[in-house]
Image 1 (cartoon, each protein chain N blue to C red):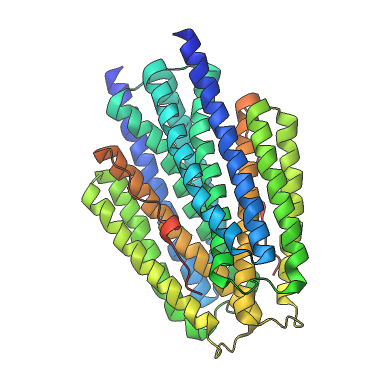
Image 2: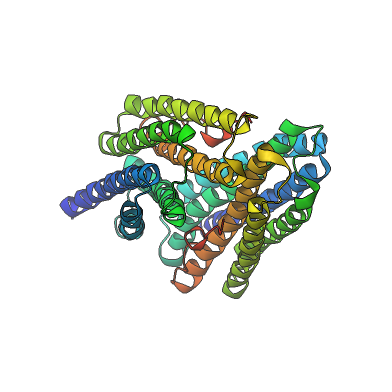
Length: 224
Length: 224
């Protein structure tokens, strides 16, 4: 019984880590599809999304079964409750990658992005991948110091997002309103992806230290 | 013990309903601040946001205490687990209302919205308030039929959102890129507010019937 219980607890942590890995990969491939106007990469993200949804359901079921059958206490109970909350964040990370891929697909064979902002999205994509990998690592190691580093990577994402808005708001923007609308939504998707990764890290910090850091989205101000 | 337990279960449901009510009010006032360029209404939403955050923390603590001290089973366990998930959705509804109010504050004394799209936001605001009230009602009554109706109100929100995008994408849009960026973000905030209300309803339907309807955001396609 104890062995099965420990296996189930570890299994939940492993599934959450795997989900974070898939969400990171989805954003990586979605970013490539966006930058290269590559339809097959966009389609790959869209069809692979089911795996994230399935894992999300499996995590919720595992967490519920643990509560129902094992009635964990103390640290284990906090792990399961945090797990239920973390699933929702990683699920959103996957959905945001899906949205990026769908915009790339909708505009194909055209490029979504004016060349002027490609560099921003290449860098936002790189940060998103780092944050996805960081969330996975934090879920696996439960290292609160690594978790706190994710906040710095999110600050870098917020800086890029602000710069992107200043490019959009510049009177010299020559690419029209339709491109501006796409860039606005895409910028928001990357920024929210980063926020959810930080939220995962916050939950892990709370789990380990009992203290909850500030919500990332509530400190975000778009200077536009 | 049993009486205290029942009171704690009811207390959790009441706090969730109260939170949904506050999120609905926040979006109502935020919409007024947006349409009237009214700084004091925007400030009211921003300062009242703490109440939603406090209730969110109180709900999480109550749910955790119930699990730790009462080890609920069967239907009660499902209620508590759903409660933990629902808190996160209502918390986001409050954050989205806060974002609307912050955009209104940032542009004050100017109006954020070109007059051409005021009607869309008046109607999206009305739907958001209806959805907030609906989520509150569903949390209190656990009526799966009322919960299913929220989906229809969300469909109306998605329709408005699509129309708004067609206005933005029209070559006749005369209000420049900066206004288009604000309108794009605001449209997304209202649409996500509605999605979270539907998500609350989905959780309640699952709780009562054991069946989970489809995620609202994953069926959303912006025709832009």
